[in-house]
Image 1 (cartoon, helix red, strand yellow):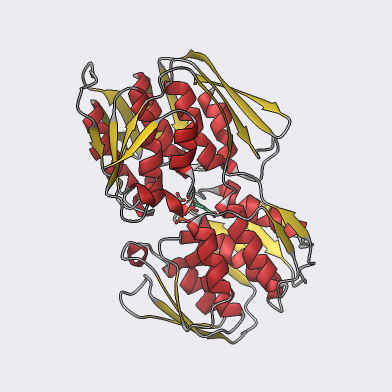
Image 2 (cartoon, rainbow, N blue to C red):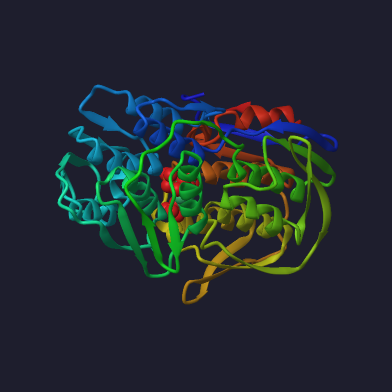
Length: 413
Ligand SMILES: O=C(O)C1=C[C@@H](OP(=O)(O)O)[C@@H](O)[C@H](O)C1
Ligand SMILES: C=C(OP(=O)(O)O)C(=O)O
């Protein structure tokens, strides 16, 4: 798969009836791995994700090398930065060219305030970084911006119990991705750590993690692509296995978001059953707390000619690629636009009565797994050619096999 330039996708001939065992959540997995490392690997972790982001985390936590290459995994970079500092491991953390453009100064500044010795090896504020040690200086209160990435906050929270004075974090600005912070605190609680989150202050006293068994739920962000398939297919009923009604994952919001967009979710034993329902003509979604769903929903609305107003998508610009630009570029190939119509307000609209063509439409993926997976369901309207399809390994390595099993014809190109 790694050498394949592109895949040609053609829709299934009949109704789509399938049952999919989704990959496990890489977010839950990467938190569980850091917590396990902080207990000196005494936990039992079940159903860890096969996502490359998680495989990388696992490999690097056991690596004896001085330089740790996180590739393109944001959580791995941010969580390891705090972990390496607190454990005084003296490592260099680096990643892909894009990773070296993703900011890290908010986390580095916070760790420096706690006594960490961290230096930038190329551009100030960005990886690669050299983390030498953390000499505790008694600081146990910090203010930290919450409007850039919640991953900095999660990284600090996970090491907070190991600090002699614990940590009180005051979150400033318009805090985004809050469910990911909740996920961190809930997973920590599973391993015996008490915390308090009142208004914008999170407090954690000095405590010891208790080794435990943790089972990782399937990935709701991965589920979103199947919601898209049900929304765009003429007829479909899909069962997604490994999902729970009370999830730690904020992206479980996809069930509510998709109801007016034509997909009904019913929890059944072991997962969720998706069926088709009526759609609205117009909707608004705030992605502040579920940024990874924005591409999926934008593509669905463009395809179904549903007018979509999006807010809370500023953080998309610093993810695997500038996702706002990438969406604008690729949606235009399907007769749709994504435009900023007000301050931090965007709209997806159809510019013309788009007609399928006999020739496949080529979709560029910009080293972003979510571009590949969000656009793949458009094969239900028109043959598509997905460039660099191996990008999906970041979160969902079996994505193309699962699509084939659902009846899509997929050929290498
Ligand atoms: O903590 C996590 O597991 C994640 C947090 C989110 O990032 P931001 O907090 O940067 O929005 C999300 O986009 C990412 O895929 C995973
Ligand atoms: C943004 C993502 O991941 P990360 O920030 O962990 O690289 C993602 O998976 O969509």
